[in-house]
Image (cartoon, rainbow, N blue to C red):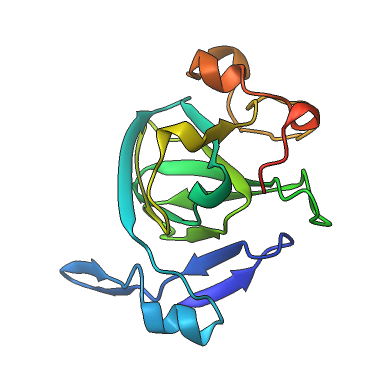
Length: 182
């Protein structure tokens, strides 16, 4: 597996070695030893999966405090623009984001450490999205950033007037109003 650092500390793009033949393909989507060999020590405790249609934006979500989660995200089928926003107050990249196209075709993954808000937009007709978390979900610790906060400057690569976004994701705080949570 190839681990590529991004400009945001702790966020990595992962590219598995894909083996193809006349039957199809095979790859390891996760290997604990390879993570450790790259200085990444995570214990994932929960896997989640979602199905979404074109134009859907999910996010920007995070878990607060002791319930914070690191995530390893990937696409089984379809294509999304995956986004991680640094919300660690003392970070030199606070408020900056990374956006990466993940697809069932390119098999790329994104590793997002604790202290980031996360979201994605669906660029294909449909997408099956899956991710590992290193902490259990806690409803009381839910947090979010407004997906169309102009200060974030995220280009979701879809027409926002036609986007399928929950009202709550549009009503989350702007970055400037976000309470410290990390």
